[in-house]
Amino acid sequence: MSNLDDSRFNPIFNDEDEYGEGGVATIKKVKVKKPRKYKVLIHNDDYTTMEFVIYILQKVFAKSLEEAQAVMLKVHNEGVGICGVYSFEIAETKAEKVNQEAKENGHPLKCTIEPEA
Image (cartoon, rainbow, N blue to C red; front, side):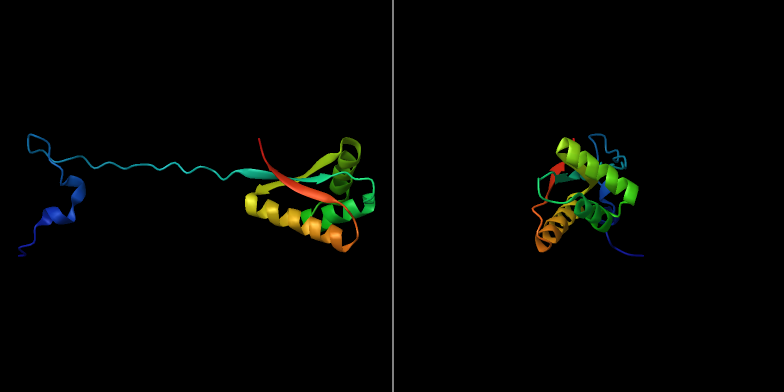
């Protein structure tokens, strides 16, 4: 037998209306927004070889030879190609890796990220 006031330990039911009736327990559902996705883009230039672009697509983006060739041709013909769509941190890391690899190998290849529509 305790002399503790039980109302302190149950705050959900502690609210009483004007008639002395207790409140109703409710569960609030919190909606979590999905994180925004980002496209990783490779841009065409007049100096980077097609072979190097295929190498980058296979090494950094784990593309098969056929997938890498398709993206490389899109970059070559249209000026830009999508390498993949990722969360911001992953997209940023992959773009930095491409830019670093291109610089180390003497290519002016440019890789950027942009938010997915």
